[in-house]
Picture 1 (tube, rainbow, N blue to C red):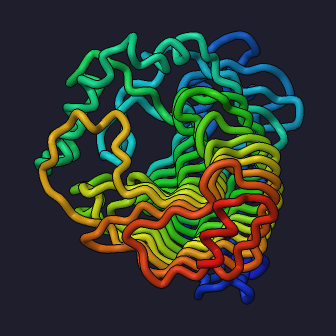
Picture 2: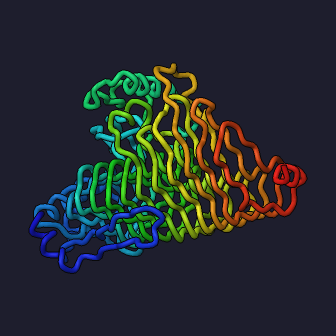
Picture 3: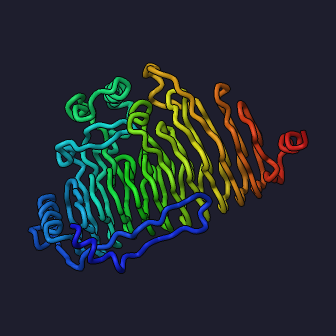
Length: 450
C-alpha cells in the first residue's frame, strides 16, 4: 500500500483554499494505480446477484496494490458492497448498480451509527470502514430497490421506537460499542445508509448518481480529507438527507445536483454521551456551487452535534425550493457547540425561514428520559449576500436563556416579502440585523425601526 501511494505522490493533485474564511487545510485528491478489475471477470452477470463478485474483485484489487474495481455498462444486482484501501469503485457510464431490499443481504452487522448513536447495524449499501485512499466514482447510477425500505419509512407501522429506546439507553449508559448489535437486540430493522465512509481518510466521491436511499444518502462519519464532486442525488424518502457530514474534518463538496426528501447539507457530531465520548467535532467544511432542487433545509446543523460543529461555509448555491435556508437545531441534552457557520451567495425563491435557530428540538426522541443536561454554545453565525423572493419568517432565534446565542450577523440579505413575522429573537445577544432588507412586511418596518 505504501509503495503505491509513494509512486503517485509526485503527481497527486492537491486542493488549496486560500480564500476560505477559516484556516482550511489543503486536501489531497485520492489517486489510484492504473489497474482495472472488472466485476464481470469475477463472475458477475446481469440479473444475477453479484455480491460475491464485488467482494472478490475488491480483494484482488487491494492485494495487487490498488486500482479500479469497474462496473461495466449494464444493470447489476447486488447486496452490500464493501470498499477497500487504494480501491476506486468505478461505475462506467451506462452502468446501474441495483441493490436488493432484502435486509439479509446487509448482514453480518457492521460498525455504524444511527442518528448519532454508535452501533452495529445492517451494512450501508456501499460501505468503507477504516480505508485510506478510497473512492466511489464514475457516471453510473446507484439505484436501491425500495419496496421493503419504503414500508419501514412509515414508522407508525413498525416498532422502531423500541429499537430507538435501546440505542438511546446504550448511548446514555456508555454500553460497550462492540456489544451494541441492534440487529440482534430488537426485531425492528434500522434502515441503513446508502453510502457510508466510516473512519476513512483521503476519500473521493465523484460524478455518480444516487437514485433513492433507505436512510441517509451519503454519510461521512469520522473521516477526513474528503472530496465530493459533481454528485447527483435524487432521493425523496423519509430521512433522505443529501449529505450528512458527521464528526469529519477537511471536507469539500463542489458542484452537483441535489433533490432530497429531507435536509440538503447536514453537519452533525454525534448524540449526547456518544458525541462527548468520541469528542471529534465536524470542522473545516466547504460546500459550494451546488444546485439544490429541493430540500427541507439547505444548510442544517444538528440536531446530533454533541462533539461540536465549527468552521463551515456553504456558498454560491442555486436553490429552486427549500423550506429553511439556514437552520441550527439542538436541545438541552446535546451540549457541544456551533461556531463559525456561514451561508453566502444564495438566490432562492419562496422559503419558510431564511435563518432559524431552535434549541428545543427532540423529534421522536422526546419520549426518552433526560439523563443529563448540557446546553449547546451557539455563536458566530453569518448570512451574507442572500436574495429571497418570499418567506414566512426572515430571522427566528430561539435561544436558551442559560447560554444565549452569541453572535448572529446578516450582511446584504434581501427579502422580497415576509408573510408572517420578520424577526423573532429570544435569548440572543450581539445580533446584527443591519444587513437585512425586507421590501414588503408591516411588522418588519416596525421592528427594524425600533
